[in-house]
Image 1 (cartoon, one colour):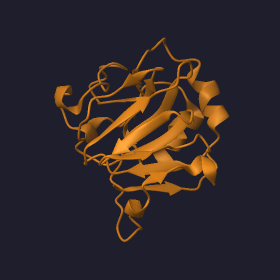
Image 2 (image 1 turned 135 degrees about the horizontal axis):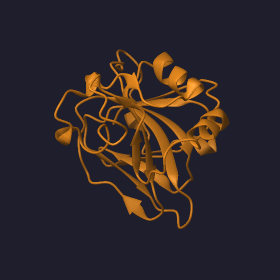
Image 3 (image 1 turned 90 degrees about the vertical axis):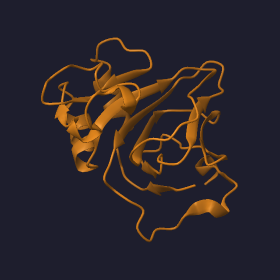
Image 4 (image 1 turned 180 degrees about the vertical axis):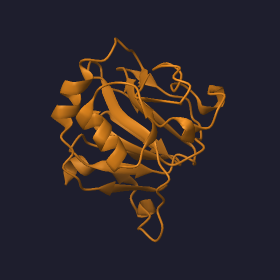
Length: 175
């Protein structure tokens, strides 16, 4: 299991304020599109269904100055907002690239399961590099609170950084 938390001062409230202007969306909305300009639905869902490379999603769709700048600063492409509603879970799968997560709204019962180990990322203004090329899923076991992350593909890698495999249950809420 590979993930790493990077300390930032990302203004979560500013992002949440900006995204209130977005069209109504349920589970995913793309923030970037390809040069073809096919809109905020095209970049959502499985990479298998895209019909092009994930790295082609580089054009910002919406006027979200702060959010778009965060995406640029973090080197994201195919950036999306992803919402897991209460009592929902994704399939167990692998992605083609490493993903970067910026938790925006979350709770202690919203988790990623990476290589069979449970990880919980708080909405603390930091971002998390996650090796989603390994089997994983995400779930929200809360009864009423959504889990919303800003997620994008990245060319970043782990290099020589610490692999926290020694943590059976990593819970930064307890820091």
